[in-house]
Length: 63
Image 1: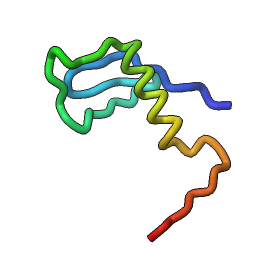
Image 2: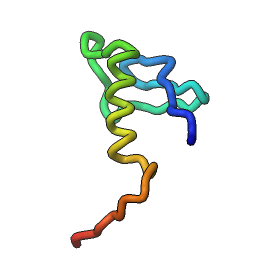
Image 3: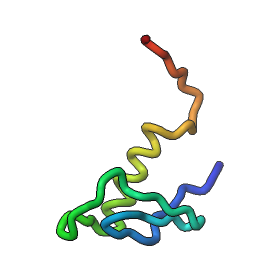
Image 4: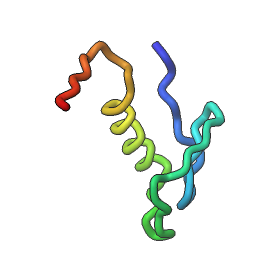
């Protein structure tokens, strides 16, 4: 089982994972909207579980 990525740095424009990957946010956050690293880790884990390909679910294209 692969190790879950851990957020180690967070700014209003980007975040960094413990493996060195750096991603820009889709939109720049306002300074008073930047969550704590712990809060953002929860968001990241949630979206990774929805968008990640970590299981055997079948993807259905309804187009």
